[in-house]
Image (cartoon, rainbow, N blue to C red):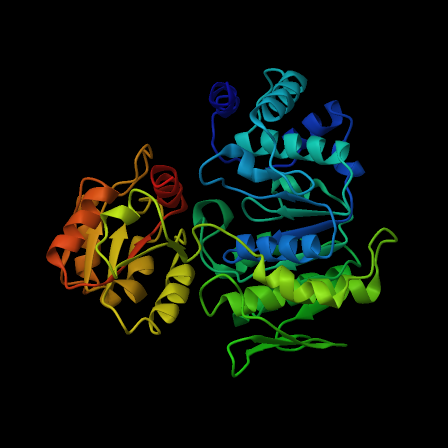
Amino acid sequence: MIDSILDRLTRLHPKVIDLSLDRVLRLLDALGNPQERLPPVIHVAGTNGKGSTVATLRALFEAAGMRVHVYTSPHLVRFAERIRIAGRLPTDPELLALLEEVEAANGDAPITFFEITTAAAFLAFARQPAELCILETGLGGRLDATNVVERPALTVITPIAMDHESFLGGRIEAIAAEKAGIMKRGIACVVTRQGRKAAKVLEARSSELGVPLIREGEHFFARTAPDGGLVYRGPSVEWSLPAPSLAGAFQYRNTALALACVERLSRTAPVPAFPDFPQGALGPGIRAVEWPARLQRLSRGPLVDLLPAGWELWLDGGHNPHAAEAIAQHARAWRDKPLMAVFGILSTKDVDGYLEPLAPRFHALRAVAIPGEAATLSAEDGAKAATRHFCLDASPAASVAAAIGDLVASGPGPARILICGSLYLAGTVLSDNS
């Protein structure tokens, strides 16, 4: 039943993506404007690190005993992953009733899938008490359906890089301008360290709107402690905390960004409903962070069972050059075992930009097509692209399982296999490996 209604909703608009606020505002008005009845909102935009930052924020505030609504996209296995209501995912009957109600309010009017599901999330959140609501933009920011929230408690911008150029523009300045569209007059925006061009755009927009810009490297800092933990320093605090539970050196920065949000809200109390944040919740919160398919080690399941003793299977859904650079940086520490890859990516992505930093690090690579995705790059073309970027042992495979089997049979072991290139591929892997 869930699949059938989701399929109907995808057919309500001829384009998968059509950035606008008019359609979602019309639907929200028909639903009684639930976006006006949300608890205090943290609104997160950016190119990379959004999901990890949102997951860290959720874990921190839940460790402090708060009920937190969270809206993210895309989902990996079940659509319900997108809408977390006061700390829990909706059951299938709850989700079905919610989607049917929103579908009835919309009628046959054109609307995108993301817009109608965003409206469903707002409706669910407005009906359930919570202390905080965290919203992740789907694409861009200025015309993203989540940007109908007029007065968030805080806005957040993660690293900005080239991605979705056909929708957001072909220059980093244009993409940064879209992300900066979530800024609201007089409301603070916490920003991770950006490249020079993106930073200039954000600064100009913040100056125009009178937005206090809280910048990494100027107002807050993070470093790795000798024991591997994280040391955070902000305008009024210095915290010694555990290492992020998510793998990758870049997670220290994502965690610092979330901690800067905690510090800002605790220090300024922009809304009366926001409680004092107990410092004792910081460590447990950081240890509790979970975010699948972001340098995630798979420890059990049918795909893991294909591996001999001593082999490791990892999964990452990053799909643009900035994400690939971050993985490549982390891979420098993986010197104890050969690194191999199962690679699949959409043809609409910057395939060469993704492979350039990563392909030379792979001892071997098997390319696969992403099941069910019309825009997938073929396995043959994926292998050719990897060869072009100096992966000397690259060839196509019929499936992820076949790719893993071939790597095990042909390569030196034990080794570390990374499945990478696409969140859609990651979702398929998580489903098949469950």
